[in-house]
Length: 320
Image (cartoon, rainbow, N blue to C red):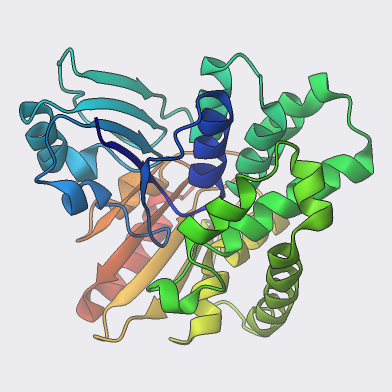
C-alpha cells in the first residue's frame, strides 16, 4: 500500500509529522507539503486510490471535496488539525482528530494521542504557532531550565519563519527538505545545537525582522493595528513571525499585516488579541480566499477594491 504524509510547511505541521514518524516510521511515505498558505494539498493526490494517507495541520473545510473523493476511492485517512473543519465526514476510512480550541495546535493534538512521548517537539510546534503559554505548560514535565526552553522557542519561531512565502522560491529551504533534516534528530535541543540550516534561518530572520521594524501602522485604533509591507521576498518570509511579534507587543489589540501579490490583490495575515484569542477566522472567512483559525487567520488574495471594506471589518470585528 502506498503511503502519503501531507502536512502544512510551517513549524506546527512539521513537528506534528515528526512526532508521528518517530513513533511509527514510514520512510517510504511520499511527502506532500508547501508554503504555509498552500493548504489545498489534497488536490495534489486527487486520483489516488487504496492508499494510506496522513493529513496534518491543513483545514478540512478547505479540502472537503478532495477528502470526500479520496474516501470514495478507498483510501484510509488519518487527519489531525486545529483549524475550522465544518462538518466532519462520517466514514469508517476516516480517523479524524480535530480540535479548534484557540490554545491548541496540531502538534499538541498529536502529543495527546502519543501521550507525551515526544513532548519536546510538540513544545517546538506550539511555540512556532505563537502559543507561548500552551508551550510553556506542555514543557513543565520536561523540567527544562530557562535556557533550554528559550532554545525550543527559537527553534519553533525559526521553523515557522521558513514556512512563509508566496511560493517555495521565497523560502530558505523547501519544507519537505527541512523535515528530512529534522527527522534525523530525536531531541530538539540537539537539532538546535547541531543543525546548520537553523543558523541560516537565524540570520535571515534577524535581517528580515530589522527591515519590518522600520514600518509604522497604516491604521491604529482601540481595536488594533494594521501594517502594510511591500511585495518582496523578505516581507513575504517575515509576515507570520512579524505578525506574531506585534501581537505579543500589544496583547490587548488585534493585528493585521497586508502586502501586495503579483496580481495586485492583497495577502493578509490577521492575529486576534492574545488576551481574547477568537474572531480572526470569522473575519477572514467573510472575504474571498479567507480562512484559518480563531486566533490566527489570513486571506490569500483580497481584491484591492475590498481593502477599505476589510479595514472597516477588522475594526468592527475586534472592537471592545
